[in-house]
Image 1: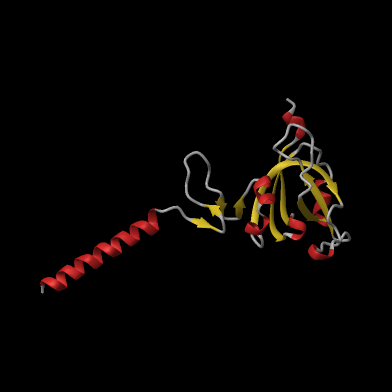
Image 2: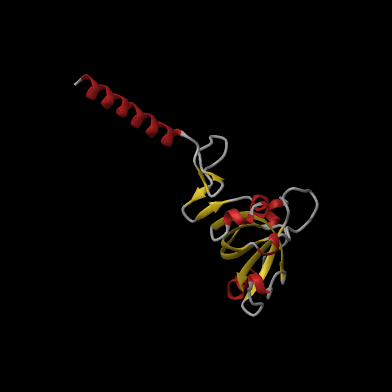
Length: 166
């Protein structure tokens, strides 16, 4: 009887320890730290993974086929990356756009990040000006050429350039 109780107690302790380790350790999902840090907000939201543009271009494979949320300053609409066969988006149906690099004080577009918007949706943003703050929600659909290619489903203007100068 003592052996049975001893084994039962050891098993209970082992299970308790395992539960503690699995629930209190840091959790990593697809290379994204999802633990709560009091200094920074949780980066996994219901509509996608919040990610900084420079983080995204440094590891496109991590976010491949994932929905991401990006914030940045609009630079300009472009034809960059359109009709490129390995990551095909037709210039008849899509327009690409660039955001500015946020790691410099100079006005340099982040050309490693290929952002695509349907032309019918882009018409709603004809008044976008360079420097307007935007939030883009989209799916990373390719990492061709080592770049990050994002099909943007939602674009939102968060702050107009004229407000930045006031």
